[in-house]
Image (cartoon, rainbow, N blue to C red):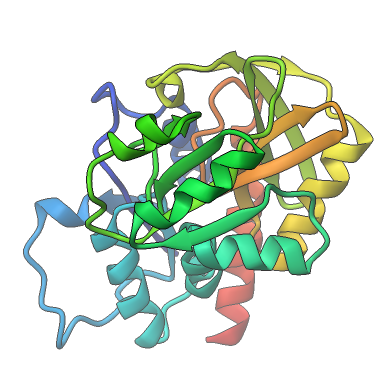
Length: 268
């Protein structure tokens, strides 16, 4: 069976060791594995038809998400499902879905006019970020009205979250079907490109991660967690993350892909 990855240009620009190992494992089982970066091709949008048995959306760019939507409309099998990816990528939708599912998350507002945000600072600092951002781009910690006024006028809707104090490190939680893993890493603008150190998963973090899985319908995803004094708080959901720092994760990912291939074959 043919498997196709929708990819993005990585930073740094080197192949993902996890994806390379996943591809090798799938090829050993007799599958054909390839992939492409949508931004580096010219494709017909009006007549494109699926030619793979399973597509894996690994990119978080707007074009990749739109291509996945096109393939979904044409009846292609995707992992994760396109509607689940769309809901996770849009931080407005994601905030509402997390809250409705009872997942601990930060208070969240949305606006196109940052001048309306100033009164919220009376209750403490805020995180301001684009509604479909990724890799930490455009994320700002705002503590004062002057800092808020200094932000550029948004060209897209912005999400405003109540700042949750934590221990000063990122807790990245990665999920493969019903298995939950976690790594910690120092917070930095480029932390998305560096592996963390594996840490045990607490029962509260595991429960929140699996609640998120049920709420979105994702099988391969990650969540960003702040370990607050009151317990873990999920502040972001990412479909098909890099799994950097998770030991021996490639065979688990390959197994999930294999199960979806089986399901796709039964449907067809």
